[in-house]
Length: 147
Length: 121
Image (spheres, rainbow over the protein chains, first blue to last red):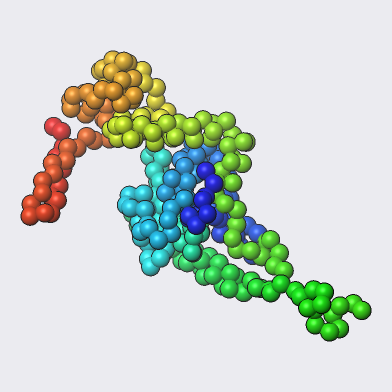
């Protein structure tokens, strides 16, 4: 389902090399366990897409707080538990890190990986140039009209 | 202008999922099954839970029925949400699915909800 205007939309975090780690994880899982990949995608669509950004986060056990604004989407497939760490940025649900959970709590290294990616996401969003529309024709500054 | 690669906002999850559905039949079938399970949840959360669990463990209705000493039709009706079996049968089905059946007693005391779980012996 396409996200409606003003509603949340789940998107993959993309690093500087153009890699999308959560999508890469899902593609690998698709080769080994396509049903589990389907369940994770289903949970992303059900719980993270199409929400009012002002609403509180999806309730436990669908999601839970990791630290601050960082949350985890909790998915169980048969006897395996998966986690997708994400954070909201305006109406975007940024999917930062996905993994199979084998320990009791989310490890510090998994949490830090997600935090580093979110910090990078924010920094690069802030540095993206916001160019004003170029003046053309009569409004263009003298010397830029090619005359 | 920033290049596409420089943009930290990657593809939408919905778009990526569509690509996976186009490439994998098992994935496509599973998405359809999860959609049915979600609809079933509206009618009977118990039925939806058991159907989802059976599906993920790769068991047929017949296999669950045999292992839980019940009939195939009982499992079929259960998974349609039209009939919930009695507790001992439900307990056997849960055990086949590697789960334990608990009953939750709930009461409201001074406006506060209290819940107590008990195993079905």
